[in-house]
Image (cartoon, rainbow, N blue to C red; front, side):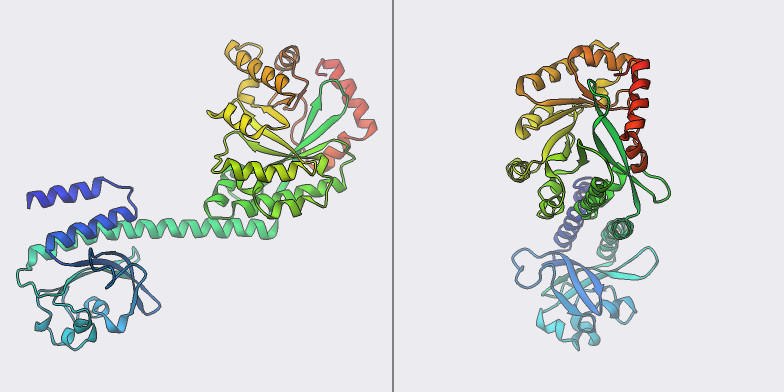
Amino acid sequence: MKNFAKTLINTISTGDEDSYLIDKALETVRAHLGMEIAYLTEFVDGDSVFRQVSAPGLENVLKPGDKISLQEVYCMHILEGRLPEMMPDTSDFPLAMSMSVTSDLPIGSHVSIPIKRRDGSAYGSFCCLSTKPNKSLNERDLETMRLFADLVSHQVNKKLQISSELEEKRARIRNVIDTGDFTLVYQPIWDFSQPDPVGFETLCRFNGQPYRTPDLWFGDAAETGLGVELELAVVKKALEAFHTLPLTGSLSFNLSPEAITSDRLPDLLSKWPLDRIVLEITEHSQVADYDLLCSSLARLRATGVKLAVDDAGAGYASLRHIIKLAPDIIKLDMTLTRDVNTDKARRSLATALIFFARETGTSLVAEGIETQGELDTLKMLGVHKGQGYLLGRPMDLEKACVLLTPEELSLSVNGYAASGNL
């Protein structure tokens, strides 16, 4: 029993608290009881569905995904007290012997513990069986089985809770996509030698309560399998700004690698001025398949669409990401822009990326410019374009349009010139 206790501890403390733990519980209790098959079932629409099975050498007899009508198995009889949880010899129980499953498998001995949800309703059963009677099964074995069943029950309920939360997230994201319940704002991008914006970066703000930052919304969408659909819904709405903005420059949109490789994206972009569209892919993005991404980008860029690598200098794989994608634009992350005028380390890293951009003929845009000192230093280092709160906060479409009218441009230029911003 000491070795068995050690096995139990190892079962609980190893693995990833998911299906692996349940598999180990089934395997361990089956071996301890000396039985051929152990399994976890779920009751679904009148059937007992086998979710996980430990049956070495008998996989053809019983496997995950198999299902049997609840009327044909012991489960409901045990749950409702007509059969005991432990039957060392099924021939001692007339009800069990009257059921075809007993002779079909066959079942000589059987132990089953009902698994319940947290609300008390029946989820399924945690079971062991042998084709032969086992008169040695005793109360200690039953308690052991209950111990493992408690462990599995905890894990099952944890998974059910995660699944429920995931469904809630999915419903929330689905509603946002279907209703368009988000707002777009536009942050101007300036060429320091020109009096008017050369483009706008489109940013998304979600209206749902409680307030949550956009990265959390997009994270939830990706987790529920709706990430690409949400991103493309945002892009579709953002592209409509071309109808309104008196702009000869560009509109930038943030997209994940998955959205860029989507078959739907080219059709979505095709109706608009492609040479004025910039797709921004963050340096933080995990790229599972660079060949696929580069192939998709090549087709888009052949139509005039430009690529920007966002947040350059903020991640660990910066240069690899940039070299692999060979972007048209590198956007210097605000973590390097911030205090670049007073922090030598930031200034050195920013200088390296500026030099890289110059050597490769890549345009560079500094993000997050908030002080005059940062702007002056970046200009001195050779940065010609930028965005940030000093130059213009994200604004709604109406204000962006006003910013581009001749009257407002004159005021803006005078205002910037007076403060030395441009």
